[in-house]
Image 1: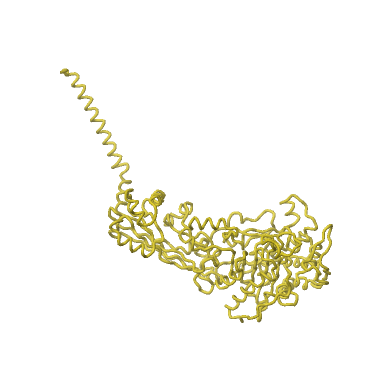
Image 2: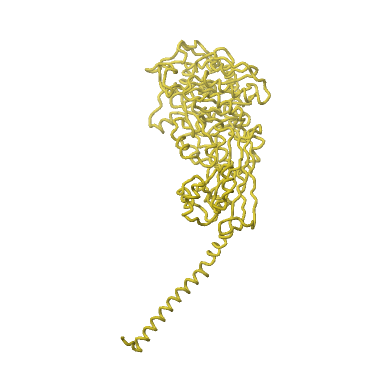
Amino acid sequence: MEKITAEALHRRIRIATLVVFILSMVMFVRLFQLSIIEGKTYKLLAENNRQRILFVEPERGIIYDRNGIPLVKNEPYFVAAVTAEEINEEELPAMAGFLGISPEEIKEKLKNRKSQIEPVVIKEGLSFEEVARLEARQSDFPYISILTTIIRRYPYGTVGAHLIGYLGRITETQWNSLKSEGIPPDAFLGQWGVEKIYDSVLRGKFGKKIVEVDALGHEIRMLGEIPPQRGQDIHLSIDINVQKAMEEAYAGRRGAFVALRPETGEVLALGSLPSFDPNKFARGAAPDYWNKLLEDEGHPLLNRAFQSQYPPGSVYKIVTAIAGLEEGIIKPTTTFHCSGGIPFGNRFFRCWKKEGHGTVDLKRAIIESCDVYFYEVGKRVGIDRIAEYARRLGLGDISGINLVREKRGVVPSSEWKLKSMGQPWYPGETLNASIGQGYVSVTPAQLARIIATIANGGYLKTFSLLKSDHAEFIHQQAIVTSPPKNHSPSNNIKPVEISDPEDNNGSVKVNISQQTLNFIKEALIGVVNEPGGTGGAARLQGILVGGKTGTAQVISRAIETHKLPEKFRDHAWFVAFAPADRPEIAMAVFVEHGGHGGSVAAPIARIGIEKYLGHTGNEKTKNKGTIDSEGD
């Protein structure tokens, strides 16, 4: 056996001593790191092992219509959540099978959790039977808790959905900006419509519960609590019975309508069809339903009242008439002869009535919607002056309602065409524009605003979604969504000209004489109530209605509308106000590819007017009106 010299033994002892010293230093450094440097972190983790901070959802405020009818409900909603820090993966299949979901779903939700403190919801919408089964098997699945929250229900379903809106799970961007306000990472906020605009008022304030739990996450005792604060109720300006009646009157057709109180600008009804069911979004829309909406050719998520632009057809003759009167080009007594059309340049511009209207003055031209009369007025007034009065009446501009990103439409002028197309304006284009065809495009909301302005004596109102006696209270508390950036005025659109900007109720007085407005109003009453008027289908017994029909061509055609494929058929318009002596309601009704405004859109308006005025104590009518003319 080899002998170890004293020198070798000492060397080995020194090496062993050095190794022990190094190991001791490593352990000391690690101990220092754990106890001093990371001590606070591990102390917090230890506290979290025995404490949980649970958010308590407040009851969301109720949305009522103007008559106090609730448009939404709050109902209890049960979810299964994991409250333990970790779950043994071997137990996942049993737990997933019991809940009727896949283990992969649970893993994904645990992986994507936004907070290490909050329970992770792994299944939503538990039935009472599922809750009972979970409670009975609590000992088998001790790491699962049943949490009770609130779900939003919309009893009217698709009716008024574009206005009322829906809730959706908070996005990452929203949570980053709202978490300082005590909003949990899995909260549901208003994501559309009134639910979004007034979310800060409706949602209230979340409460908190600090509870002590055991190693399995079971609650032992409450250590502290901040109770939630219920959201505020709001009262909308809409009448849900009018809304429902008008939507049903569309009978499956596409279109939009906007009804207003002319004196205040309050929105009484606002529809876009086809619609969608906000109940499907209450706790997040299923992918198949969302894809169905996106693929639907009817575009149910599009708010046609503010986001679709169409030629206004003969409704635009109101603008042409006002321009002619205000510029002194014509008088109410000015006559033109209509024989069915007029030649201009190398074209023949037809009237909708092939045999012509004969010699008519301005009032009869409006009542019977004579195209030739307005061709003649348009030639004399010119496109730029027509455009000026269109802008005075709010066309080419937005209402600023903040409900959606509004479209401005197009008010054509020589300047507009040169800037947008790089081409000069041709005289023949003025004839088309003078009857609301060609380049002219508007939204239903814009035409509703025009007819309300005529009805109230010349005040261009700001739209309001809240009942007038409730609006000031809510606006003091709400953080109302600012208009999107694309709502800033366009460089090529002039502002609305006004003469009296200090009117009350958020309105401006348009720079149009009272004499002209009164004449137009009288002519519009004739459209509905005099023989030969194109709006006879809106006539009501005991209620004097004024209005104007419009039939906007989609394509140039030489065959009758009903023989064309639907996508090429004319659009139907009708604008109306009632009662004529003191208007309480004004509206625009649009039926996409509906045909004649007088026979298709006017009856829908009649139904809305009758329903609303019936609610305010006016005599209900049995006379459904007649169609004196199948024209515009």
